[in-house]
Image (cartoon, rainbow, N blue to C red; front, side, top):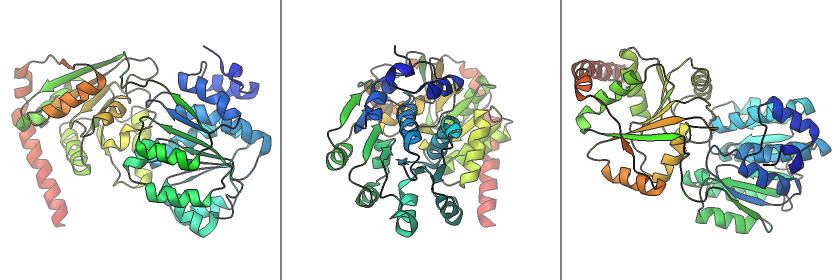
Length: 398
């Protein structure tokens, strides 16, 4: 395997890579970096956790250091959390070179973001909607010399239906820019975007089949729907002390399950798109550093977030899109570490479970547990559920 210097990365950037514990390029990094340094358009397909961010970050910084052009690069992402995470990487690698970065996302004041833009940053990391707001009011003439556009998690952006926003953004960007598009999966929308906005791109595919890493243990429990919360609390208790990321379908469910877990003495918080940005970032930081042990989240937390030490991904609700399972379980068993996922399967989830097993070409292993240990919790859990429901109904009345 090549080291970063063999790929054309400068000695100074290689030293920063080592200081940040990046010693050997991943597959996507080894294939992308030489083409990106040479100014080629790239469309890269690779699973979550494969190292896509560093694959485009290093060439952007190296090329930027030579020119120090304001508004050199725009990076488009689907979520605020991913934007801030990418910004933290650029700060870690680019601070020594005096590179200025601005994050443009919803949930933060437009005025303060405009003030930062007036300082002529080198790199903008944006969600599409907020970028358009600033394009219309301030950025239209500023980005005429943009050199590199990155679209990260492109499949997620299309899933969130940003096609109209893409059309507006591309109409304002210069035609001769370098374009780097990255996605976990292929889609017709992405192919069309590539045809209309890229020049003879290099196509790079890593892990073409839908696979999970070998260090991930995949379990399931098959239970009656009415006892779902009882089993949920049982699993929290069995893995007490571990870092647990729980996925649920809705914001309301995330809040209710968090209250239930808290009332029963667990160190739990929730994360979803309805929270204000500062609170979301605060919760993520606490979970990263182990100050929160159980994070109950919607699929907002399934993509792009670098949380290094998740011991267990618990699917309280199975995802309706089988491919989303890959992104959820990609939060654990990262960088060669072991991890586990447990899927709660009720009589209503059998078809979803089978779809996921077909996609990953593996059968889940039944988790061993003692039914008596679960049922002993039933009365306590039911009482606490009544308390949760009473609290929520009281809050609504007030």
